[in-house]
Each structure stands twice: as C-alpha cells, then as structure tokens.
Length: 425
Image (tube, rainbow, N blue to C red; front, side, top):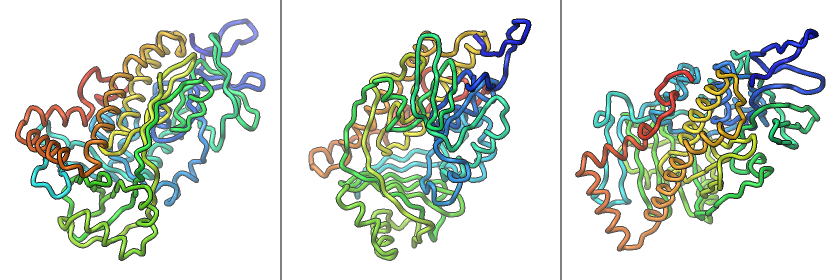
C-alpha cells in the first residue's frame, strides 16, 4: 500500500515524497549507496513519483571534484536508453564519445574481430564518459525531484527488517522507515552482509591501471582490446581527442608501472597501444585497483534487493560492469513502479522474486562469460593461443555470430525492461 500520514479525522493522506512522523523519516524505498547505479535508480523512482530516500556516504560537492574519481565508463546502447529514461542523458551526451567500431586482437596475432555499428543498426555500439560527467548529471537530476530525498554525507549503522517493513538507522541516530531497502553499496555491501547473503569470490591476481591520454591522431570512435599475457589492455575513445586506458597487469608489477616517471610510463603505454593514435601524452592522474569477481548467492532477501556491485562485480575485460548494474536498475524500477501505481506493497515477496527472476540469469551468464574470457586470454600457453586465435578468426568470418555477440554486448537481447528501450518507467 502507499505510505501516508493520518490526519485528525483518521483519513490516510497519500504522500508523493518522504515525510517525517515523530523522529522517523517515512518513505517507500531507501537506497543505500549513491554510486552511479544507486543514483540512477533514485532518479528513476523519484521521477516516477515513488517516495524515495538515497543515503549517500559522500556529498555531491566531494563527488564532483576532479580527483574524486578519474575513471571512465563504457555505456552500452541499452544503458544509454536507461539513462535517457531516468532523465539524465541529455546532461551527459556532450561529454560522451560514441563507440563506432570495436577491434579485439590477441597480442600480435594476425587474427582479430572487428565490430562496426552499421552491422546491427544506425546508432553507436555504445559511448564512453568520464565518471565525473555522469555524477554531475545525476546530481543535477536528483535536485529536481520532489519525491526524492538525498541524504549526504550520511552512513548506515544498522538495518532492521521484518515482514511488516524495514527501518534504516544512520550513524547520527536518524531513522528511516520504508517498505523496501535497496543495497547499492558496492562490493563490501553492508546491506548484503547484514542480510547474511553469501558470495562467491575469485581474485585474478591482476590490478587495473587506469588513466587518460591525449594523442596526435583522432581515434574515430574506435575502441580497442588487446589481449596480452598479463591481462587485457583496452583503449576507449573519449571526447576532445582523448582516450581512456584500462590496463590489466600482474598485481606485483602494477604499483611499479604507476609510479614510473611520465616519460617511462608513456613509453610502456605506447608499447602496448601501438602507433594508430600517434604520439601520446598524459591527461590527468593515474591509479590502479585490484581485479576480482564477486557474485552474491541471491539478489534479494526480506524487504531487500541488491543492485550493481552489491550483487555482482566482474573483471572489466568486456566493459560490462556498470551496464549489468543499469539493467538491474531498469528491472527493479519497473517492478517497483508498477506495484506502486497499483497501490501495493513495493517490498512484498512477490515483487522481489520477480526482480530476481528477471535479473539473475543474465547476470550469471555475463559473469561466467567474462570470467572465462579472463582465464582464456590472460596467459601465453601455446595451445590456448592457437585455439583462441582460431576462435577470433571464426567469429570475424561469421556475420550472424558477430551480430549475436554485438547485441549481447549492447544489452538488447532477452526480456528487456521499458527503460532499456528509452521509455519512462
């Protein structure tokens, strides 16, 4: 049922935004975590009029400083549609570079796969954006939505869940009563741990080195993935003649590479990137972080749904991490909003079961595929090199198979939620 207050006559007053009763904030949905997936869900639900509170560890001011997050994100076509449906894409598009072509190659092998957007449609295969561009657009939308309350900086101390509802207790003592809690709080998810949901983990022994480069020649919207023995090396096009580097390297060596003087670091980049972009120069800083796979044993619990990296985290080999999370957002938003509009309990078991059935297979499949690719390509074992090179050559020569892989990467196969088609939830 809708949440509301009760006036002196005993009549229920419906509310389109969170409200306070006594010492508690009352709402329908609490989202714990204000990352890219959590904020997108907050915008989708708030835009649909669902009373929502997003609890965010860091303030918008902190999260939009230049050095808070120097990473970039590859957004698939279906994810772009989700962002458009959430009302944020228009503020992102000028900071996005289209991916028109993708080239996948194994080290210096003559075998490769080349994908071109015209093979599957009249729109790009995806886009690449600086994370700061995405955050600024999301915060601008958050500020426009009366049904959405953004609490930041704020952290969760405890969560109480029962068949009747849930209470989120913040470290400053504030209490938020809701029908549903959404864990969007990343790999170390407090929501997941408090619910006792176990995870499967595997550490790849690799770190991702990330940075942005400028270059002499234009990239023409080409994304490149080189499979090297230490791990994949990706070049992703950005606006203003820039390219994002995601370089997977053996963990023991990654800190050494990151700490190199600029000229030596650029030499190592140029050696791996090749010469198709001409001379390179660094734009901004560089960092590295460990790579592993994590998958929750379930996506739901009583009054709780997990999205994004609280439910699954994968290797960046195929650029699908946030795209999986945004498909979670689309499925959960549609399930919750349809229930809300019928005046039903948005945290009821049937609602959560529907969400899990919708997302678990797709997430499991992508996690298995990405894990298999990492294990297959992150080595120099001669028989495997021969097998994977023959595989790349076969895919390149079979257009129907290429189209199948392209559509999967774009997120346009299977049962697609409304948001993945660009439709408001």
